Length: 283
Image 1 (cartoon, helix red, strand yellow):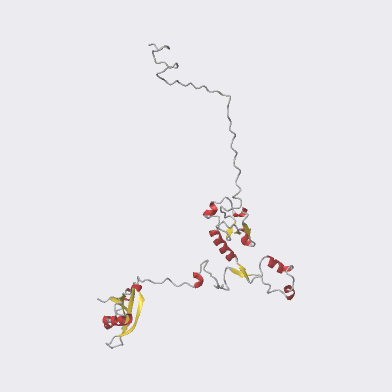
Image 2 (cartoon, helix red, strand yellow; image 1 turned 90 degrees about the vertical axis):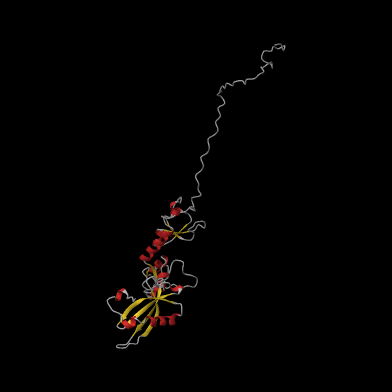
């Protein structure tokens, strides 16, 4: 029985092309080799006197794929010829993941030694900074210690582009997620980083909420941490409160407690006599 795909049920396949199953099977075997082509799965109509025969693929590496052999015939001709033979995925075929551009595949830590990571001219994380390109000749020869140039260099500028508000917000979100107030380490810390002596403060807008940890024993050593973060390596965690001295031992030597002790019953009295004997040994 010849099957017709659901998308083309309203179109009737050409009878001669639909009956050319053996021709299509031989073409598939010629392309794939013997034992690589399985049972006939059906026919799909591609046009007038143009149909595609589908065969199962027996290759273990192509589970769910199908061999598609397209056959056709000329008008008023009875000879059916093979147009093309290709391997196509079926509904249950194993496919590779969808292709993702390289700049979307990158993750933190992927950049290695010698790698270059160019940024787009319209990168929303950056905005134009102060480089002095618009200064006059007198301003360019002006000493750095005076004028707007001094303010720029003191602010750490002098660069073509600097972080935009979007870039600062993205960085703050990453740092807050890794070393922020909601992490389990911060929840169990004795105090926040804002009061820790190992905190190295930074300048700029981000310095109002973040700093760099300089405690080699901290899990955040060398990392940007929120001022609300904290860990057991806080500089003041070692300052323990003084132990409460124990009370002096008090001994009351003036109170006498009388204790009555019952004598132990014995068969010999205090004089060493048996019961019923006198001191002369007479009964």
